[in-house]
Structure formats: C-alpha cells, structure tokens
Image: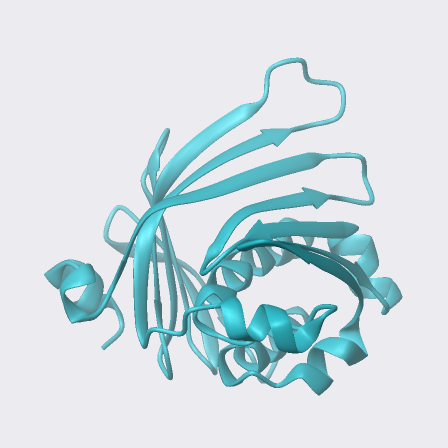
Length: 205
C-alpha cells in the first residue's frame, strides 16, 4: 500500500513543478521557461501498464496545486477518488468519507514524499539534487528531464522518471523498479483563483 501510494504521490508532486523551479540541466534555462502561478488546475489522463496484464489501466480526473497549501488529485474515472496532500498529512477520500489518513510526522514515506513536494513548491533545488540524479535538455520552447532516485528506498518505490514540458509540465513517465510503466499527460491547464471549483477550494480548508 505504501509503495503504490508513494508512486501516486510522487506523480502529483510532478504536476506541482508547473508552478515551481524544476531541478534539471540546464537548471537556469528550464527555471526561466516554467510558469509559476500561485494556483494551477487542469486535467490529467493516466495509463498504467502492469507487468503480466495486456490492457493498460486507464484513469482521468482533475488536479489543483495551490502554493503554500498543497495538492488535490481527484480521480473521476473509472472510480471517484480524491487524494489531498498538505505539509503535515495525506488524506484519501472516497464517497465523501476519509478512507485513509497518514501523518507526515509518523510515516517515513509521507515525510519523504512531502519533503520532495514542498521543496519543489519552494524551488529548493538542493533538496532535489540530494534525492535525484538529474539529466535534462532544452530545445526551442520545450524541455525534457530524466530523474533517477539516489536513495534505495525511493528507487525501489518509483524507479526512474521522465518529464517533458514547456511553460508547464506536459507529460510524466514513471518506470517502476517492478517493471510497471505509467504515463500521465496534463491538459486544459488554468491558473488563478477562477481555475478552482468551489468544491476544490473547500477541500484545502
């Protein structure tokens, strides 16, 4: 459970890079290309290919990243599910009720993922360089970055990551150590307070 949760949470933190500095080579160039709105919402489409299963698992939904408050990741299809990350906790909601709550002070996985998430939001490149080996390039208005976890525990959970984007992150590819493969694309991005629905705004309170 914790392993799969770590993968999901790291996916969400990558969406957050759209509003923060991304540690990559060349760092300065990619930082200058990325937009950093205080609120960013949009659609995600995810395809997960599991080892031994022919058909990929497809899902889609909405995400919101609010600077200083956290991330809201709402899966709409095939089954409604909401994951909310704040600095001190992770809450999973199903059917309007709390299905799981993890305290960052007690769970090492939560503490690690939240550390990465909020270092991204704050543009703390030194933290990212501690956790990942980075390799990236820029071509025109686009960039791509590969991240390889340095720590064995993190590497075991997520394997390697690849991102592409321009002003915002466009795609995320996760190759897990188990052989599972996940591709996520982001679209219909909106920034500013009007980007969030009333329900999404209330979820951060």
